[in-house]
Length: 217
Image 1: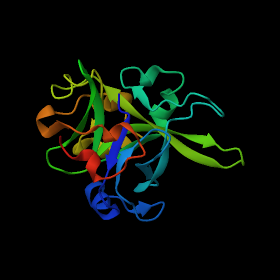
Image 2 (image 1 turned 90 degrees about the horizontal axis):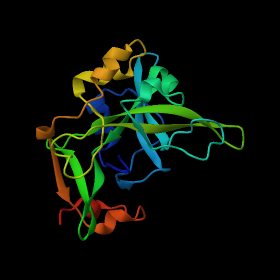
Image 3 (image 1 turned 30 degrees about the vertical axis):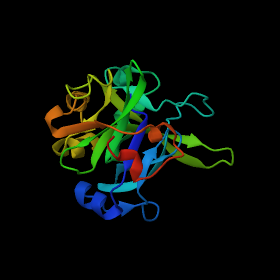
Image 4 (image 1 turned 60 degrees about the vertical axis):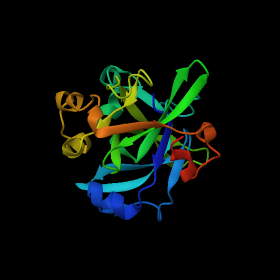
């Protein structure tokens, strides 16, 4: 599962890292505790160019649906009646600098921050759909694909978000990519390239959104 995200990189850093040339929205303020139903920054391919823009986290499978999943299992997404079409035609990268996960311990759940050792932002494999607003307008919603955990994540949780490797980003976003190619990218990210450490209970509330959230305890 992936239920909280950190996105602290600036628009310029993201543009350089991912090769983005189009932008929707203004300057990006750093976010240290993004929760479901809030906007996440995503990258999609539009007429051959990469565009960065916000989508609401929690995919709307049908107009007015009460349940809006924030995660979708990578193992079943291609055959899911709800998500198969989005997997084929509407894939995105959810931009993150890290994410949180909670480990169940005797004293209760403890929060961990997980990020790349390089400190670089990365792209989480996502799918998206349009949401039909009450005023007749439409907005984009998304969900993050999850897979089995790597060696780093296994002691913390039994799932982890799919991190798309740098050399796989273009193929993930390309319309012509085959189902076989897509599934080859839905695997646990190498654990030696990641780091995890415990953080304070501040992250338990999405009202707390500051650098203190990612400070080690």
